[in-house]
Length: 607
Image (cartoon, rainbow, N blue to C red; front, side, top):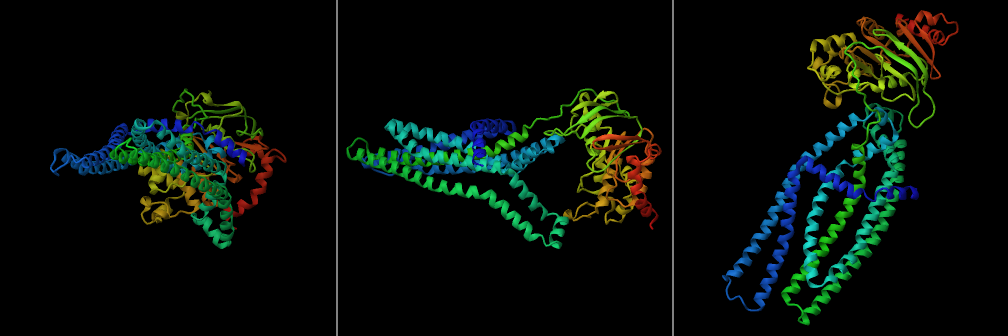
C-alpha cells in the first residue's frame, strides 16, 4: 500500500501549476470580467492596510514630537479622514468582492455541471463500462465542490501575494535578513501541509474502489426494491457491518496521518513564534539604541505580524490549493478523457441499410478471450432476424459491436457496404431504434417519456398513443390519474409502473422513433406470455422496409422471423428459418426450442 501511495504522489509534482493555469483559462473563458475585478480589488485591499498603518506611525511621530497643537490641524484632519474612510473602503470592497464571487459562482457551477454532463454523454460506451473510468467518475462527482473552492483559493492567493510582496519590500528596506528569517521559520509549516495533503489524496486515490463499494451499499438503502429485501431478509446488520468495515479501512490511514500532522504542525508553530519573538526583541533594542524611531518600530512590528499572518494564511491556502488540485486533476482528467471510438466521415443514405458481418471477431479491452469468433452473415433490408443462444453466448456483445460501442478485434462490419469504422455514426443512429436489455426509466410525463424516441422533434400526441397501443400499455396509461400527462415516479408524486410496464413504455419509445432498423434486446423479458404474444403480433405488422434484429430467450417469439442465428460458444452454430433449424436433427436450436415448448404452450393456453 505504501509503495502504491508513493507512486501516486510522484505523478502529482506539476499538477498544481497545470491546474492553476487550467482554472484561470476556464474562468477567463466563462467570465473574464471576474478576473479583472478580482485583481483590482486584491490590489486595493493590499495597499489600504499598509496605508492605514503608515498613518498611525505618522501620527505617533508627530504627536510625540509635539508638532500637533489642535485637532483641527490640516495634516491631522487628513490622518483622521484616513482612519474613518479606509476601513469603510476596505469593508465595502469585501462586500463587493463577495457579491462578484457569488454571481460568478452561479455561472461557474452551471458551466461545470453542464460540461460534465456533456462529457459523460460524449464518452464512448466502451469507456463507460471500464472499472478505471467508474473510479474516476466517482472521484470527480464527489469532489466537484472542490473545483469552486479551488477557483476561490486562486483568487485569494492572488491577493495574499500582493500583500506579502508589499510587506517584503518594507522589511527589506529595514533589514534584508528579517524577511529570510521569517520565511525560513514558516517554511516547515508549508512543507508539512503539502506533504500530508498529498498523502490524503494518495490514500483517497488508492482507495477509490473501496469508496465505490461503500457508495453501492449506501445506494441500496435509497432504492425501494433493495430496501424491501433488506427489511424482509433482516439484512440491515449485515450491510451496516459491511459499511463500517469499508469506512474503517478507508479512514484508518487518514486518521493515522492526521495524528502525525498534528504534532509536526505544533512544532512548526513553536518555531514561527520563536522567530517572531526574536525579531520583536531585536527591534526593541534598535529603538533603545536610537537606531529607529518609535513610530518606525510600531510600523515595522505591525508589518512583521501582518507578514507572518499573511504568509501563514498564504501557506495554508497554498496547501489547500495543492490538496484540492490533486482532487481536481481527476475532474480535469474526466473532462479531457478522449474518445476511443473515432467517428468516420462517410454518411449513410436515409433508407433501410443492409448489414453484414464479415469475418468479425471481438474481445473486450484488456482480455484475450474472444467473445465473437469469425462471424459471417448478412441481413437484407427489411429482414426480421432473431439472435438466440444460452446466457453468455455473445448475443448482447454482437449488438454492441453492431452499434459500434466497441470496435472488432479483426474482420469488419459493413452498413450498406460501408465499413462501420468509416461511417458517420450520427447518420446510422438516426435510422436505428435500440431497446437495450437494461432499459432506462425516464421519470417524466408519460407522453414525453415515449416521445423521447425522437426527442429533437415536437411531440406528436397521436403517434404517442399509437405506439403505446402497439406496445400494449395504452389501457394502463388511461387508468392512471392524469393519463398521458401522468408523471412517472413516486418520488415526483407520480405513478410508479411495474417492471413490465416500464418495459412496455421503453418499447413504445423505440417504436415512436419510427426507425428503419429496430434492435430489441430481450424486449419482453418482464412481460407476461399473453401480452408478449400480442406485442410480437404488432411487431410482425411493421412495414416491410423495417429491419428487425431481436435477441430473445423465448423461442416461441422468434419462430416467425426470416432468419434465426444460433450462437453457441461465441460462434455461429446454426443459421436459417425456424423450419430449417427444426429440421436439423439434434441441433442446438431444435433442442432449445423443444425444451421450452411445453412451458410456453401451457402459458398461452392458460392451463
